Length: 309
Ligand SMILES: Nc1ncnc2c1ncn2[C@@H]1O[C@H](COP(=O)(O)OP(=O)(O)OP(=O)(O)O)[C@@H](O)[C@H]1O
Image 1 (cartoon, rainbow, N blue to C red):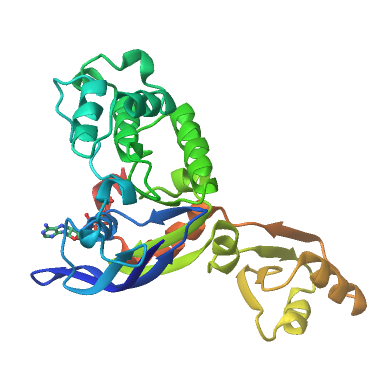
Image 2 (spheres, protein in one colour; image 1 turned 60 degrees about the horizontal axis):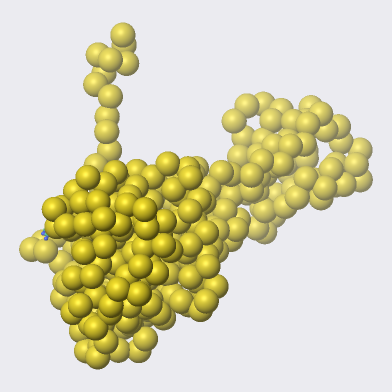
């Protein structure tokens, strides 16, 4: 379990992490999601004691990680997949890491097999593709069989097979009761891998929920599009607590907060005509973009002369 309490990090006047409070539980894969510069890496670095919080605390299994007696066995971290001596073979890289904590060949060969690198174990890590490098980073994180896994952008640049492989591995590791936290700035990746989402923007928590609840609770959430020649009267009947109505054109409006069945029944009760009643589920991607729209640090703008062209 990882507990963040009012965790804050400032660099000069820049607030990178702004009072984050959250609990990352064992048994599920938690996705740490946010636009570039949102504060994900800084948070992860504070969890493993590589950065010191300006204020607040990050606890791993109830204590600051820096005070851990067996750090490698407590947290397996992949914070920079490129941090490998490129001349060393994958196996020697893991042997050297293991030697610092008394882990020998048997375990090294076991994790190499677990991440599918046995056949290239003797090749220089520098010759590895991006995907193989990520696998080696994950092997290093798994080496001491840690209860907590912290992976910064492990899916970055992987193809669909690679993503599926990571999903199966992480689901299995979480199923064994481990705490698994992985970061990404892409919802499309998280959607495939995580069960639970922790979304941040400009150093603050924007959402902490299961993927299903995330869609349901997002401002763009589930809606029903209604097309009716009696739109005005139907909208007036629907208006009420917890219902939101949006009109973009005459005779057509969107309703949030109720179901298409309830709208259809209400229309029938009052003898109102309905030509279309269409439930629309917001995609996770659009829910995420909507949520983080105001917290994107750098937004690309198209020069006006290109728009005119
Ligand atoms: N050592 C540092 N000195 C100054 N500013 C920093 C430092 N490290 C991070 N920052 C700033 O803190 C903010 C958060 O950065 P961080 O790398 O944690 O974001 P991130 O969510 O991991 O982004 P990305 O997805 O791009 O990796 C950014 O504005 C970044 O420029």
